[in-house]
Length: 449
Picture 1 (cartoon, one colour):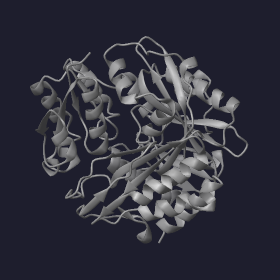
Picture 2 (tube, rainbow, N blue to C red):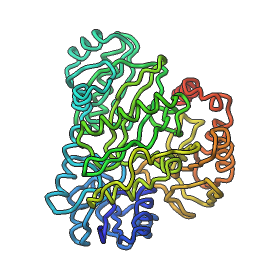
Picture 3 (cartoon, one colour):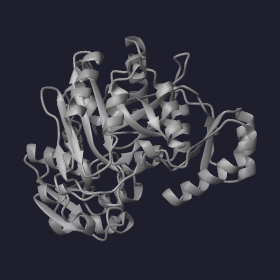
Picture 4 (cartoon, rainbow, N blue to C red):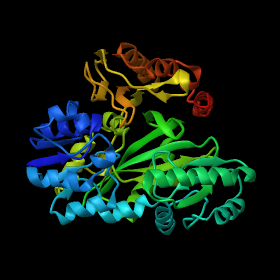
């Protein structure tokens, strides 16, 4: 087992990994930007090295600086968390070249699943159902338009090398295609330095269901249940829960086994997420695979009783999984709400400020993952997510009540947040009836303000 791990990230996920390292008796090294010298993760780690200015491209995305910090401190492995370098094939390769373990999948798996068009081809070859769409990437507007016409509207324009909702546009009719394709392509080039796109059929009112998989280097692969991530604004998730109410036990089993098949087709080890869309006829289709830990991983941990961060570390160190599929028995219902510095009354515009007063909830079945403290000043350089509140209860109704109670106890003064909005949403008839389509329509209307 490792003696020292460097965490190549910031915010709540860096804090989460540092805590896992402490519990395993492993020393931790944090990296921070000049902007983050007073961040919680910088203070909690056993060591901290400043790797550059606040701008992510000059610090957290600077692979050479991150690896230099690992070498200088004698870290044997790097955990990338999510975002930043977590799905960067070259960074994973550089770790290997430096004799440092990358706590995640192999560079080959990252590359195979990171390119959305290549991932589609891999899944088709493995017999995994995929959404109808293009088999190759496209950059030419006229060619893309012809392909969209062939598939039939509505279609979704997607970035081949993207994620997180960037470079995505829904086209409902042919006359919209040219303008939306140019916008998506421009956004993709700016976000990922890669303007290759692909086109797929848009499934209106589809549920966004993702399956958590875990695999070791010896070829053992299990699924740990699914998460319903259908409530989104601008393709950004807001609330996640497990189990997904739209699935019965048979469909849950089939999706889980399909996710394992997808992971094996990618030669995958470590924790990963296979994302599916489920249409109104209960057909499910592979959408993509995230080759990293997910923001919403705590709901799976609460229900399945498995610490995914610790398992990633053990797998990276060469250990086999300590359990089989038959041992995985998720229980109860878990919900996660993302608390963000944004104003729901102004189209969810990001907000800045300083935390003047802070109180997080507690109690049985309540968990908070955050990097906040009183006096913390938000930076314009980073994501607006402040905290994740996660609850676990025997039933969905109990979990909803527990989440509303937890949100009601949460106090973050000095910054405009979406707390009140989430509290009201959890108490709505729409959420009680699991009507994601109506919620998302309302979110789109608010975003359009």
